[in-house]
Amino acid sequence: MLSVVVGGLFGDEGKGKVVAYLAINDSIDAAVRVGSVNAGHTVLWGGKEFKLRIIPSAFVNGGSKLFIATGSLLRLDVFYREVNTLGVAGRVFVDRNAGVIEERHVETELRDEYLRNSIGSTLQGVGAAMVDRVMRRLRLARDFPELSSYLADVVDEVHKVLDAGGNVLLEGTQGTYLSLYHGTYPYVTSRDTTAAGVLSEAGLGPKLVDEVLVVFKSYVTRVGGGPLPNELPADEIVRLGWVERASVTGRLRRVAPFNYDLARRAVMINSATQVAVTCLDRLFPAAAGVKEWGKLPLEARRWVERLEDEVKVPVTIIGTGDETHHVVDRRKDVGVGR
Image (cartoon, rainbow, N blue to C red; front, side, top):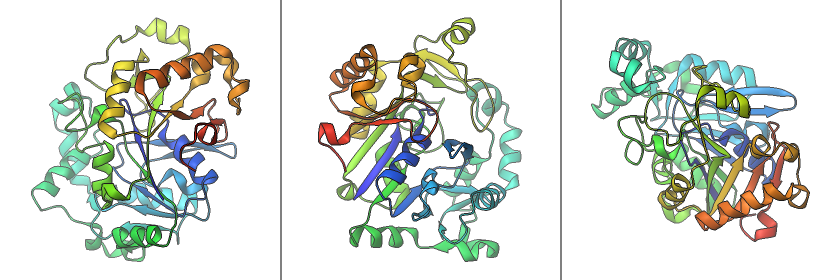
């Protein structure tokens, strides 16, 4: 079974939490991470917070093999730091054709005033490395002898897991509206972040997909430049308790109320079969830590039901707190997945 998890907004939706939950509860055999180090996925597990920039959030399942896709870009310093911090050496593998960001790529972006001041780039070297890849001059993982013990044909390995009847979880990056093609261009990232795009990065065809889970937060946030409909002023963000900082750059996130128009389009673009919602407890504090649908406050259930009515897709995973296990799992009740 192949499940794809993607962000439905501008990133920061809580994909890391959702992936970690699924990895533990669905006995995931293999997890694949796409994207690059400009996107941080946060997992709170066992009382510890992990901010991941390249290792799949499914690391919490000690039996899962962890793969970094062929379309990904990694920085060696970030990769080694996470491998050592998480203790995942021996079960994490990098595709031989994954790209490598070098210091010169970071320096190129730091010198670019347009990226820094207009677009609001994270300046991690990702865009410059993507330019080199398109120009066919980027060095790949196979070109670095120090990576030799981690190298694998990830496309082949993941297909083997699927052919054997195993469960594979594909972890997308950022959000639909940061897609180079489907986002708020030019205020976007350097790749396609939709389900189709992340499948391509991993070497997986659409006929293999069983479930596409689009993740929304109960309100909208984005970092950097670009449009944000109904953006709230700073004092209102503080009053609502929605002050957040980006996990990679530390910059304050811009905030707006939930946007049903954006949600409907994201569900359409990604061919979503399920929707996950995180941070429901930020809207309805009485929902904090709740794990059963019937124990959610009535107004919270009505909010979820309205979202289902708007997007015409079942809301199956509901995050009610920061910890990975703070989840209402409705999949069995609504008859999808699992």
